[in-house]
Image (cartoon, rainbow, N blue to C red; front, side, top):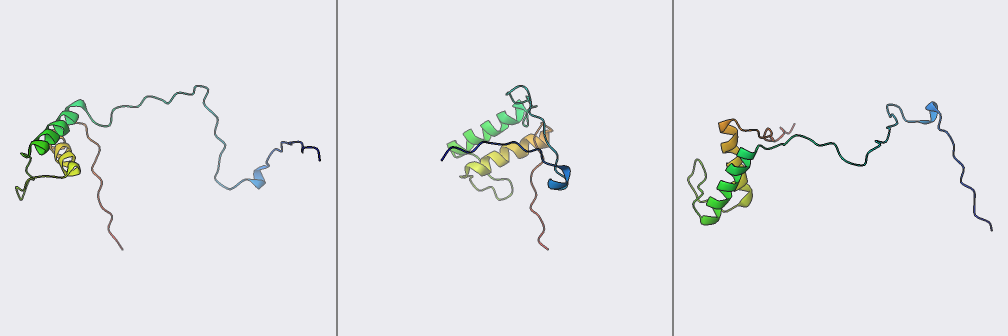
Length: 98
């Protein structure tokens, strides 16, 4: 049996889903450069918090307990950077369940 020929059909507007549009492909394969999400200064704050945590000297704010979690150390560093007004994305809030 001979292979089937591929045919190209042009889709009509009625056959397409509502609200979808066709996108043009970009000519260059590279991604567009975007601005930094975190400033260099805030990166230094996180770096300092991580070093303190590894040395066993990082304490959590209110309770004063020793921090052992990597994620908590990062959160403390970002929180300090936010307090100083460095460029840091807004922290995510939990949604209220209805």
